[in-house]
View 1 (cartoon, helix red, strand yellow):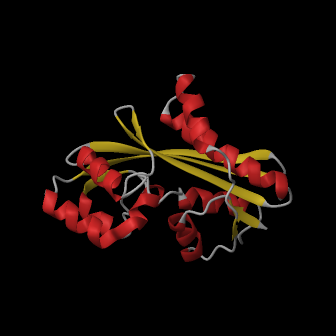
View 2 (view 1 turned 90 degrees about the vertical axis):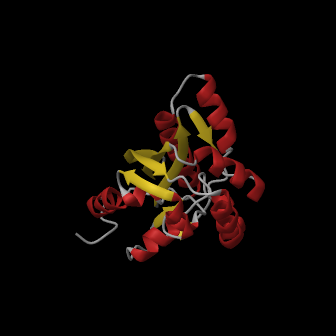
Length: 196
């Protein structure tokens, strides 16, 4: 049995599209408390995203020890400033104005746990450069995209309208969407969860 310790629609869609059978069970951990703790300890976004991914997978693994559990987390890091999911469209507007015409990092931590043991992890980073979009474009984008953008740390989905905000990116496309899909699929094949 395979469990995704997340309610992320993007991550679920990635696994669905790849033909992977899984259940989605959110971990319920206090992500913000861990971020605060990690920042206070001087840890960077890579270390923090991996810790969060591992904690999510471990929390679900405690209740489902026989399952392979995927934990994932993504931090948007712009020169040391970490962005959280915007609370509302007003915050999304403010964040996107801050990201406009600049480059940021999407830092991904992914972990696979079984029976409380970490068996695989990935810590990928994608560099994303936003284009110099106009205020009118931003207003129209948020009006059309709606509240759903508040479920993304960057207030955009590359697989959707958010692609129009981006000038370029360097790195793994799937990691922008929240999972390093190809290495993860290889891990699942090695674990016997997927056919070789």
